[in-house]
Image (cartoon, rainbow, N blue to C red):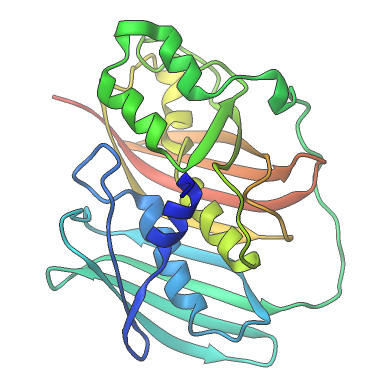
Length: 282
């Protein structure tokens, strides 16, 4: 079984009642549930209550409490609206009797209309770059074995364009570009590709907001606060996608980052915005 097969199995939910689903959690180096996992599972729950011909075009989510990897997550879906063109769903993720995450998602049937996009940034092709795992190995003993293990176990492969230096305090411009794709082929329909990209989209956002501040990953406490995502066009998450990220602002212990996702041939397929906690450790 490939890493992405494991991810798809992990995203899949058990239906325990109409509009109620149960998901399992997986530890990826922290006792807290990874935000991308909750995003993907919540989108999966909402998608399972929507007609097959309607695909997600946007989601807006808030992370309320840290998730517990040792406990299942219950997803409650509210069928807010079923319109002629659009379908709206609200999802609550619950653990230990408390909401840990809420999301609104909108789905649309395919329709013809205006079409334009911004150009993809001019960056090196992924074949000219090495993975973040290979970069970490180059850092040698400065990178803890637990971090190397986490990189090996991830179901998404990342190739950064700007060489990250997260272990030393270097001031950089607040942007970065990262190629990504799933580790293995995905044979399912567009909805699963959206869910895999939702999972992957939670990586690299807050580290982009760190870049101008001469801090290392060891100095700061990071936590996603909210996350919004728009799906513009169809894509495959098992083929290289460019995640072009920029952080326009950081203030009041919060970092704000936005990103655009392009296919290798320059098609803009998704956009992401996130604000997260960035606080110096005591």
